[in-house]
Length: 311
Length: 274
Image (cartoon, rainbow over all chains, first blue to last red; front, side, top):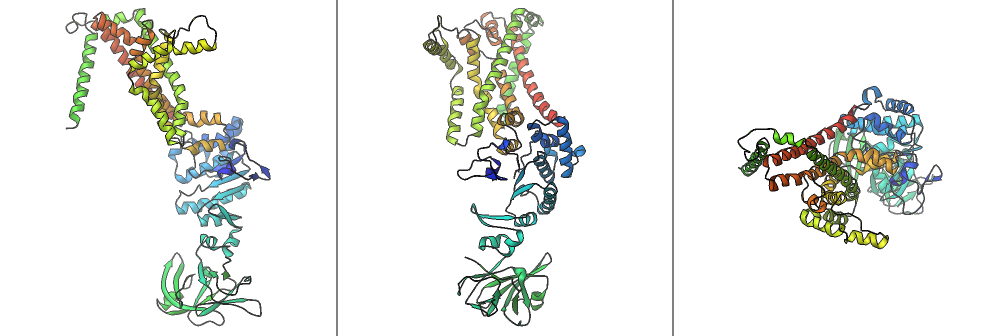
């Protein structure tokens, strides 16, 4: 992020923005917007002056500046008439956030970078701001790069997610792709919960589907298994595990309920398989609660939802 | 209990201050019995007015120049990532404070004299007929006043510069501000309280300067403190000396009060602008 904005120089390689290399260009010539994690609102300037700063630096005419400031402040729902004269110390965290956004948008940058600007906000405000930020970004049709550790924000706001681990890109894709087909264990656990089950032998049916034996049962995996016939891990999202009180037809697993819990609309339970592996489930059905802790239960994986971990 | 020594000291100083005030309204040889405004009337004499103006002008000039010189030093100390470099600079800045003003002034005499270091260097580079007159004039006094007060200006500046987050500078440059504009629009306004404190400290310190003008001015530059010494020590005119002291203190207090007003003015000014 700091490299794209020009605050740091890359030790190697080339940075291109819309196909043009920006290497060696100082930050003030790049026309890239950056919303800082700390927001970096100028404490000695009013809201109006903060937002006008970028335009003033470009030597824009005073009247045009006032007009533009009013426009972007309206966009972030901070009417200039009411908030323009306020000092940053008189604003709440969410309002400062909006000022930072308005200040960045006022200069009409070709690319806006967000460096986790909402990390300091409380959860509800963060979700609200995420939706709003997304709609502002869509309506202005400006390219944006948003860095975050918060996977919910990431999947709620983006067209494309780039997941990085220890400074290296591990997967790129739409939020759905990355969630449904994670490339490795890190990606899988980054976006939501994931069950990893140690697989036994793998069989191929005549119709092309693959069956993996786990504990005393089996399940069908959706993707091709390249050559391997033994071992590996199977990934299943908790919401794709169906709990059944009777043994199902076809592939399934069985185990005992070790814990159930109700939280925000979902029943979460932990099922202990016969070989000691645990499976997390999340469901709107209260099957596990009805059966009670310790009861035997069967698990069926929704079709096409189990995948082999490629590694 | 702990306040006792402190209140004793404050009490003693107050009594001494009041004694000076009382004497300034006395008459020579009858400092404690008579009341008169003679000393203050005598202050209107152009001789004293000139010296007062000269003292304040030298103090103001030295305060401004010292602050300008100190700013880059303070900026380096506040921004450098090397702890060693910061400590080295700090030691260099603080060292003069550990050496008495007298010794420092003699040092300047050695450097600025007709045969001193400065003239030897100038003589080696340029072909000058006569050595430059750097000593026993205003230039010498000014140099001395500046050098001895650099720490007073640097330290408050460092404190206020350190309080400015780096992200503000970065935000300004990403928003299109060149390096120079970052300074004028962000760093200087935010560091202003520290700069103002330094200005006031140096000004206050130099209005009462005594040793530096005495040694580097060679009695050709007369400041208020020197006149007070002459009146009290040589002429034994205690009321006159006291009246001059009262004026000196009054100026020091006024400037102190001004600092508060300036500091507040800056923040309210920013507030009122839409």
